[in-house]
Image (cartoon, rainbow, N blue to C red; front, side, top):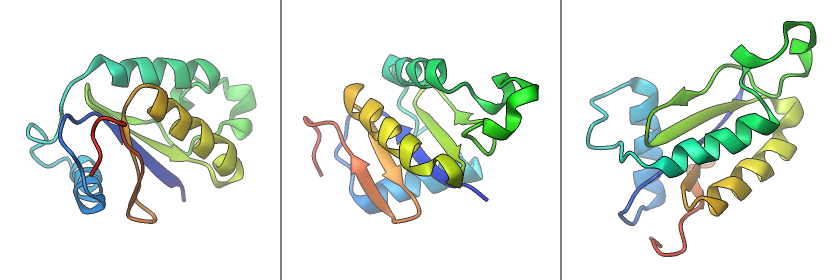
Amino acid sequence: MSFDLCVYHSTRPQTDEDAVNRYISYCEKEDLSPRIEPNEKVALFLKELTNQHPQMKDWPLDDIDDCPWNADFDVSEGHAIMPLSFSRLEELYLLIVSLAEKYGLFCVDPQSNKIVTAPPSIQK
């Protein structure tokens, strides 16, 4: 079991309901074209995050028990879903939120059905 966080780019204001619906669409692999807004900020976010904590597929097998992820990320040019291990939840939650803020991305916590952070120029 994991704790998911989802970051994505949008140029439009988002409500908590909008954000959770996006997350669900990403998970269910619906027609994502209206929900994915490609932006290089997502790639920059992922690069910085995975430089600190590589994805599970890139984690050394000898040390896999220390991997902070429960699975590889679900990624497009406009979003990323990260399955956090409960043992590293607090540390990674704060890091992901901080990086989402840095890169001006929305971050949604689907467990609480809330937007955790949104770009300052796009408030709901």
